[in-house]
Image 1 (tube, rainbow, N blue to C red):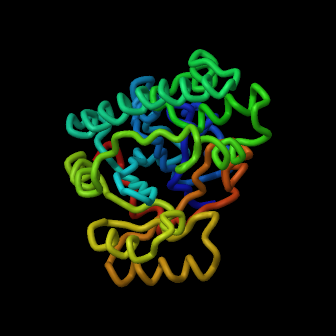
Image 2 (cartoon, helix red, strand yellow):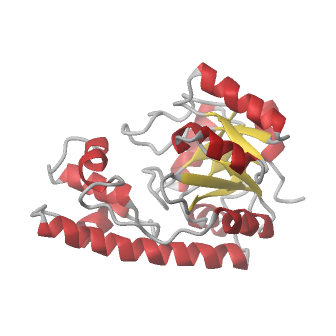
Length: 274
């Protein structure tokens, strides 16, 4: 086996606890595991503060996936090897999470006016330990109460951009995100460039970043080759991962279904003892 540098726990919108994710990685023989929750490092901090990181059997790479502002595109920047106690990073995360909670309440109000049987408490039950409340938690709740058949349908009809219950939120600018990741000692990379939907924008971002997620489940072979060439042109580190959430609504259902080589993954690993 090799590595998966893009995974999520239930401290953001994944379904596995950090312990369960690490155990699954060890069980299938992953050598490297990047934990990259949305807008939080709480999952990695939970492992560290409970004596579970570092751990024998799998090399954990502490990370975070931060959304950056753009008027029409979704830009997600993953920071690897970030200091999970860095003040600048935590300040940015707190501001983002505060905005998430404000949007969460507004979306629930909109859904209730449209007669959807959903309460904040219902979503919070789905979210569990997560402070990083997002549309995915709301979508899962809508599915649970029978309003939609799938999470994707909930996004396509109600929660996605341009839909009746879409609410924008505060997002830091790209340069701010990159700067904060660097302040935290991390490596700033662009996640799933194909999903950005604008390769000219992707190339502009490559000029600012340290790495590019070349290997990703929804990338076709020609996409992978294109982004590989971009990474080489801009002298970027090449990363990849499954974007594992532990739910069937994502691209990859099982951890280990999508991996990258040790040769690539080890470039992102720094021993916690060094």
